[in-house]
Image (cartoon, rainbow, N blue to C red; front, side, top):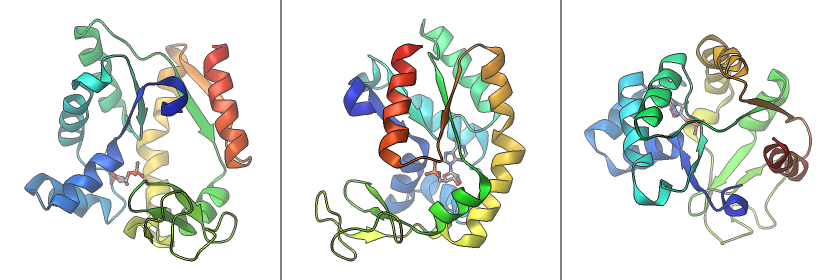
Length: 196
Ligand code: AMP
């Protein structure tokens, strides 16, 4: 979507994984939450994402991925954007059942270099352990084990699901059926955004 729209892609999970890999104090703090499938505290998360979107490559606009995940983060984001004379345009709600989410997460492998995701059963790479796009090494995220994935979904229902109502009331929510094939979901996300 970032490529199609020419906007920057900012994924809070990627920011935390990079920080954890660098071994910084903040990164290790984030990792202790990520490994358990819990959310990183709001103050740390808000600070990191706001710093990221203040950089020049985000001036034209941003596709936020994985943020906000709590009402507190959404309120802080709205306030920070208002100060910059900006606002959230639209919010895509990709609706997928709990069973399908668990199936996808527990079979997911990701390229270390380009982040392309694969699924062991439904979308395997041509060569085991290697990315079709760039030849990079594939790995399984530590928090994609079935137990941690289950906990992450519990956290989602408690802390993130209230955002559906938050953005619906703001007239910004667009729903897409995420149970379909990845290409179809991608196409529908773009078409829904363009139509809105
Ligand atoms: P993701 O790659 O979006 O699935 O995020 C992986 C993990 O990073 C999450 O399970 C959280 O521990 C942490 N994380 C990512 N985004 C946020 C956020 N907006 N708020 C709090 N924690 C987050």
